[in-house]
Amino acid sequence: MARTPIMLLGCTSDAGKSFLATALCRHLANRGVDVAPFKAQNRSNNAAVTPDGGEIGRAQHLQALAARVAPDVRMNPILLKPSADTASQVIVLGRHDAHATRMPWMERRPYLWPIVRDALHGLAGEHERLVIEGAGSPAEINLRAADLVNMAVALECAADVYLVSDIDRGGSFAHLLGTWMCLTDDERARVRGFVLNRFRGDPDLLGDAPAWLERQTGVPVVAIVPYLRHALPEEDAFRHGGRFVPGGLNVALLLYPWASNLDEFDPLFHEDGVNVVPVQRAQPLDAFDAVLLPGSKSTVASLAHLRATGLDAEIVRAAARGVRVLGVCGGLQMLGTSIRDPHGIEGGDATGLGLLDVRTTLAADKTVRWTEVAWRDDATARGYEIHHGVTTRGAGASELLPDGLGFAQGNVRGVYLHGLLEDSAFRQAFLAELGWRGRCADWAPRLDAEIERVATLIPASGWAV
Image (tube, rainbow, N blue to C red; front, top):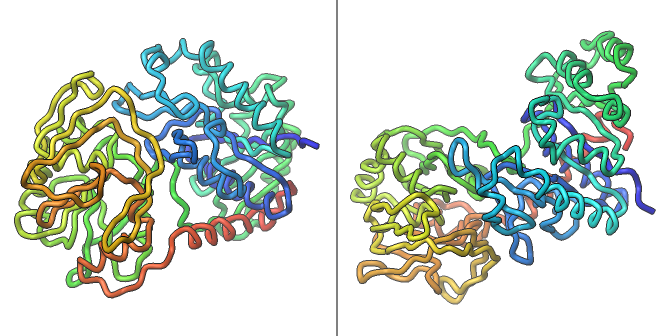
């Protein structure tokens, strides 16, 4: 028998909804519940590929793994992939929807809501329980008429709603009370409890505050979730820090605007003796052992940023001095000689950095799929593709991966496959070329162990779900 869905809504963005949804999915799965995640609309350039070749937000992909169910495009039927400050590509049920992308933001609801509703009820009919995540805050009064993801979903499926506040930021009781007051009467009736997330210290320091909040609202504080540092991928942020260590193995990761799928570099941050240093502004790169250019939702704009900041010259200088350079997807395209944009997908043509003798043409159709290819010494590497580009090589570049998926020229490499550094064999070979003497462990079991660790926070918080 289907049970009432659980829905997490935040007082603010980054209150920890995705993290808690992941924890809840594994907690319930460990108790034998057939659970699935759902987020009606996500905004992120960190995308994942489902087994049938659709795009969903990385967070919902992770939550599906936590729930031990196959990722499904219905778990995130609408994905907004920002390509400029005021523009996003709209992915509907895993595919780019040009019509929705062209529509003004506030006019999309009549077109998108039936899709959200059908995906919601379809999943609810196939699973015992849903763990649903909202977006931002339900208290955004100016966005209420266009709501696809917060209280509209809660009312549609009669969910038990829990309001989440990040108490580590401060102001939680005001946030919770204020958010509750911004809801309508029928919306307040769905709220079952308040959750204080990322709590450090002694709970006795809260004093009478939870009881005071309940007197104001009639809603109890049902969970005090301890603060926990974790290695789970972020939904749409980048929180890794790193510093150059003289004499160590140092890798520069370039963080240009519209960089995408940065979580695929997470395994490098967790290898002993590897120092990954995020780089946003021009600085000398020739002392690094490697430079990484991640994917980009807007390769041409990101390339323009490199030139505007002077990072382009630093990349070229580092490559000339023998530093290993690896570009992934959009990063590969930037390393080439040219990018042609005949369909106006990214606003026009561009000249690349010229470090790889390859040329890219942006195709109208988008390639989205999982791919396994033969690699060094008949080994295989597995990753996922998300790109419009079709890249061909000139005489100066050699094939690194077959079928136009990877190229090499001296110490410069470019690949279309995302996720290769999550593959232990590829990561081992990459780091060994830099002189690293460690041994890479499989990333998937480590990630699963981390999901198990965060799931223990649910009973530890006192949350009875």
